[in-house]
Image (tube, rainbow, N blue to C red):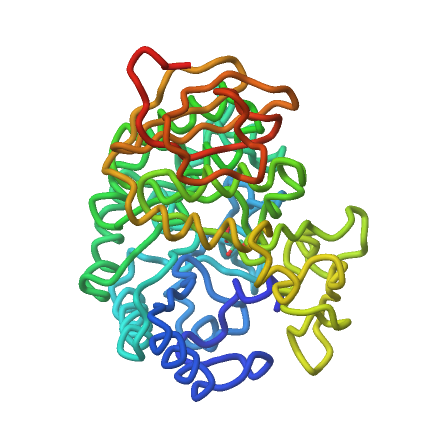
Length: 424
Ligand code: GLC
């Protein structure tokens, strides 16, 4: 729990804090009965310092006699001294990086990947995958000339990251992951702009579109991010997660429904973070955190009912619920105007949206695109806006979202039957 699960001490078991392998099997079976599949998050780039491999197979890790200038993702040197040598850690010092150039390590990790596939999972979200291979000679990173297009720790921002991640031969390591899982789904946490996705998409099914996740709630910036990430197929859409917070806080509670509408109408897989389907916000900023990077407030448990733990557990959750009386599934389940009902409707509508995406011209502050016969329009502003809207309304973010051919403030809609002359 140095990085709350991202420091794996055993790839083939469940931490007793969470339960047992039998519990896991029950979860997969219960999901299957409901027509759902389970994806797992796999962390192939580093283990916990407590993994027995670190003692028994130190040569499966990356060592140097002297540290180079690489900076860890959370700041500080990426090297820590141990018995007169230095091991590499791209994240916390308790997360030593594995050496994917070592065939024995690759074989051990392939076994771990097969273990869960054989237990019935549908595939993996692959953690921090651009860190899988780095420069074999461990050369210093050059200073950054252009700013990296996604947020990084300020110390990491100063370097170009050319050698510490995303090695030119990364495809060879990705191929080993693909080999182990067959045609099961692989979605990469590729923390790079979409222009750099190509080697990843040769082996993975999709890469998270971080340019859109990090775009502010601004139509022009969002259009540019969608445009960049749809230039080639392979975007997995995500607007919120356990590292950056939930929709209602990131974009404002008044925009949370429109954000969900956008997320679930883009082409390709979409990842909706737990809590977003009921419009849950993050816990208040400034609360003490047990995560050193301060991400606890994004990670409060799902709220099923109004009880003090939100019905998440009969035990003591390690993070408290956030206003379970105000936001919970039970209160929203049968209310057709709730965020939960909107998200359910979106999940139904998204099945019939056409292939591909065509961005449409639209008024300032409006993001609009065509998905086959359907047209999606989102007003990012607090004012009424004209927008490309078809004659038939398929779904609105709420009552009154559409008024005489305009979109209400903060509203979004899916319509059909757009006349060509009507483009915004
Ligand atoms: C990924 C995870 C993050 C974790 C890091 C190190 O970025 O999303 O939560 O801290 O990898 O494993």
